[in-house]
Image (cartoon, rainbow, N blue to C red; front, side):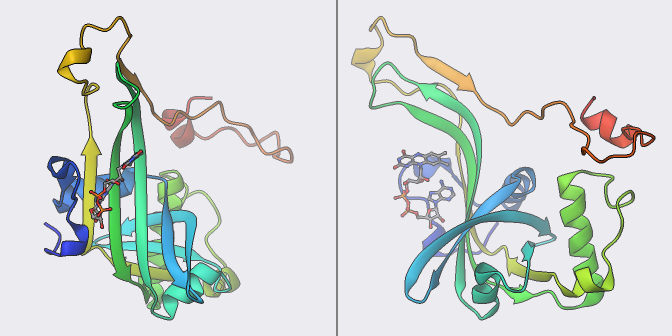
Length: 215
Ligand SMILES: Cc1cc2nc3c(=O)[nH]c(=O)nc-3n(C[C@H](O)[C@H](O)[C@H](O)COP(=O)(O)OP(=O)(O)OC[C@H]3O[C@@H](n4cnc5c(N)ncnc54)[C@H](O)[C@@H]3O)c2cc1C
């Protein structure tokens, strides 16, 4: 379980709130990106970015010049939201339309991952998140690229998940209305691979990619 903290108590539909680490980790691992909110110069800012989970830390990376990373490195508290859309929920009433989702809210203060071995491991996890097998295929970071990447870790402590599943919740008096009701399932589906325009024709689509994304 995440640490008890009144900031992370789901209020409305409290039954949809989850605080189990495994549930939170699965959502963080499946979601491809997050939105990071923070206060900069007194104003709220929200920036989408890639995240990975390395153990019990959520890790963000990028250019040391990024405002988001500079601000978090300086100690600003981050508020991070992650959402996976699972379906459109069509109710008999307009009011009860909704979405099925799995989401996570996380609060914390980042620390730089400066240890070279930890930083390289976080780079590996970022690469493998984009596609498992890439780390062993693509060129590893040069010294300049390694130094030019800032890696920040936020402890997954003040974190909650919220999950909506299942059919629409219609009012009893609406059940006999002649209106279609149900769920349109949603998922992120990859398209056919598009080779880079300058890819050498002799380079075949690799087997580890084909297994996941048939060409
Ligand atoms: C795809 C999607 C669509 C949504 N559409 C709507 C909408 O149209 N209208 C609406 O009112 N709500 C919507 N929600 C739900 C919304 O995220 C909040 O849960 C909702 O506003 C109720 O918040 P609250 O006032 O109970 O809690 P708040 O007081 O806002 O939050 C208290 C704490 O609960 C936790 N929490 C709240 N919501 C979530 C969440 N979604 N995931 C993880 N932790 C959470 C956080 O730790 C937060 O700090 C949607 C959620 C998703 C993922």
